[in-house]
Image (cartoon, rainbow, N blue to C red; front, side, top):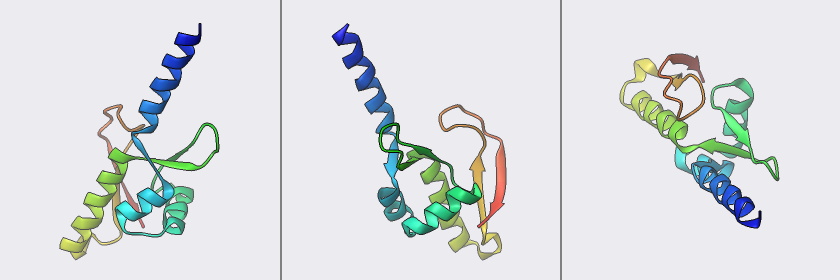
Amino acid sequence: MFNILLLLKRLRMEKLKDYMTIREAADFLGVSPDTLRRWDRSGKVKAIRHPVNRYRLYHKDELREVLRNLQEQVENPSKRGEVHLSGGTPGQGNKQKVSQKI
């Protein structure tokens, strides 16, 4: 029984490795944690809550997509203010694009 619990804990931790804390995510994107909180509240970036401490966690794949969009805005000012996020949960393969204003 103990081995099963240990295995489940390890699997959960591997999944958490796919996420960044709000500070890590803010540093990765070059924005403040408050900006990420606002984007989360408005639905522009989706955070999940840590199962133990309820802190926000951001999926690395979604953050990479947001970073690509931010870099594209710098290179192409006509797209400024848009963030294109894939629909669904990261890793589910849903490629429907949604354009949202920042």
